[in-house]
Image (cartoon, rainbow, N blue to C red; front, side, top):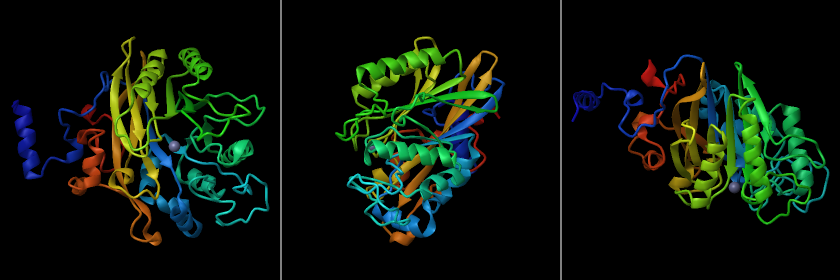
Length: 382
Ligand SMILES: [Zn+2]
């Protein structure tokens, strides 16, 4: 054992070494992490999936009550992203008809699985919680048909939450959303593997694997490379409840990263899949997070309730924008102790023996965990 490792182990045994500064051998780090330049942090979260009990809780206490413990971390990032798994279609019932808006959670207009629709208060609560951008490309995008896609975009636009992955019918709207923060331009693209069998008649959604869309995604990334500082691609893909990515996911991730993207942030399997560094053919250190699992949901197993807020640090250096590090805030969905108690709980160092934390570290090393503010993605540079 090397001397430094012996000292670290000794300090850890004494409980002196803070776990968040203890980098194990598996900790994901990035070359040039300590180069000088403007830095920003992107916070990425998984599926916003509001089953019945979550909507009941939100109807009383607001959606923010579900993720209150995450808010300082969401607001602490410069850009916060999540997958919005379902429409926010005001007054659209589950038969696809426009009806008088009940203005409350009625489970006729606003519904849960298998056909989701969320109350417009969600858009407001996303904004006030600090969410900057959501993906609207997923298997539930068409749960209120084409009109539902339009209505979701309208409410997000009114509220000031950016969205990627879907378009209004007949709108000349780009598939790309560029967010400029502290002079760092980050371009976002989102796509989905499927739409639960609903035909995308008005071509409103970007489809990851349809050959014409796939070509468009690669061409768009190549064109964006010289115009922006970083490119994030968010595919909604893979097989539900699988903890490992399939070959199609792996191939797509590598293709977009080799085309010029900086990071791939995936979702859909409802469980975490690995977070990995990937070296591109042109020598860039990029990131793949195959699935961030559920951010909030009523699913009840340990693995569907274990999630993270993934923090990706970017530095704009003299030689281009690089990833300076990744960290994650471990979280656990408390949803089996009565509706009143449904909330996302932040895990800290004391919870390291919990099954949820153990489960999380199967996908991302413990050394990358972040147990407290401030958000520092490259602590080795301090
Ligand atoms: Zn999904």
